[in-house]
Image (cartoon, rainbow over the protein chains, first blue to last red):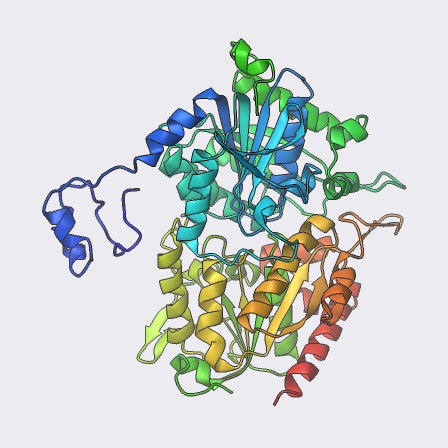
Amino acid sequence: MDVPENAPEECPGTQSESAGKAASCEGCPNQQTCASGQPKAADPDIKVIAERLRSVRHKILILSGKGGVGKSTFTGQLAFGFAQDEKCQVGVMDVDICGPSMPRILGVEGEQVHQSGSGWSPVYLADNICVMSVAFLLASADDAVIWRGPRKNGLIKQFLRDVDWGALDVLLVDTPPGTSDEHLSIVQLLKEAGLDGAVVVTTPQEVALLDVRKEIQFCRKVGVPILGVVENMAGFACPRCQTVTEIFPPTTGGAERMCADMNVPMLARIPLDPRIGQCCDEGVSFVTRHPESPAANALRELVDRIRLQINLDGEPVAAAAASGAER
Amino acid sequence: MAEEGAPNHLRNVKHIILILSGKGGVGKSTVASQVAIALQKMGKKVGLLDVDLCGPSIPRMFGVETHDVHQCSDGWVPVYVNDDQTLGIMSIGFLLTKKSDPVIWRGPKKNAMIKQFLSDVFWQGLDYLVIDTPPGTSDEHISVVESIRDCNPDGAVLVTTPQAVAVGDVRRELTFCRKTGIPVLGIIENMSGFACPNCQECTNVFSKGGGQALAEYAHVPFLGCLPLDPNLTRCLESGLRFLDMFEQSPVAHQVTAIVQRLVEQCASKE
């Protein structure tokens, strides 16, 4: 993890005893620094971030190696689900810098972020749900964020360090697909602030599981606890004849088999319901609009399960913060 | 044709097509693989380059995920899926020692690998190079565009699904193309409707029409809709050739029509 960006393939790590002295260090721009034994200074912002997030009780990453499995959809529905309890303060941080979907899914597309003395204000869609996304910083829906890794990392740090989240019971972090800059940054920057864990989303087919297995390995490698796996788009019931088709067939046993093989909890299977996508497009809560659907039942159970797992209903948020402190 | 200064082996590639999308999971790799196969069936010599370093799907789609790549004196030899070597593939998937290992690289290291892929793969002269990309507008995309700029790429095919959340990201990809000077060959709307195998009722599982509307808005060609077909997913999972096994399916017909249109567009450039 402490391998600098410009380090060669076999870098032993800057904190290693052979730092600067291994064969692979030849020609590395950091060789002299490492060999001289000067300790690499830890990023001071990590402590600042930990301090800033002290009033955030729980932090959950929503991950998947694979794109398009429903991370953002699920993050949104989870936020709506937690926030049904009016006393629960929910924050959503959208670190998908290139494809920021959370504002649309939460129904606040086009809103603006304001700065105050205490930092950036996230956008509130209700008294107890707020969201921060790069989408709020773009002038138009056509604007592309064509940034290389270091610049994306800088923005993620700002989201953590400079946003006035206030007192939150839970902060949900939506991520882009993959195991790259965004994922490394968020994990490194939250090192001291702490993370409850990650919920990993997949669809049933092997092409998705191929990537999701890697994501699980990533979590293990960087020390992020895995709360469990959600299998999304698991079966489609025809609205006319009710025949269930596996549009994304679990040719290798689906998430259930993968979870058994990798020893991670399987949290839920959510069926494919066209109304979920519609609600995301419209920015409304699917569970509120279609409470009787099988997918809504599955989502409600999943929200309750995660709530228990992170002990969300444990000790209450400090009274001063909960009574609608200034934003 | 490529000009002087372009990465060496790309000079022998007549046409380069990028498959892009701002959005993940819309079917870029699926479309890339079917476009490559359709071009091969039309008698073209095709290369398929997978620059999705974190989630390389292409090897599995061709049933070659356990293959290794070899080097010859001219560079890396692509993995050929058939004996007559009319379709060759390169992907980071072939370079991983353990296929389940994640590639946890930051941007600079990804960029270095992509540049190597583009300059060191010994394609041996191709009619078409199809480049599959990960979602987004970041390191991989910037690096690919910078590397192929001198090669006169024919352009990009953008893949979307119908719903607004997807179209919202693909709009940004169109801006990326405009800013980087990559021509847009057209938009494909994938996962466009599902016909129940039992009663044939068509349900718009991921909404409908977003791709066509986006193409009209952005004044780019709309190449067509591809409906959801579980047979396509099954074939891809098992490395089977969908276009051969389900030749009469709506998806196969559409893919063939789209590729014919692309070939005409590329030929008019020659």
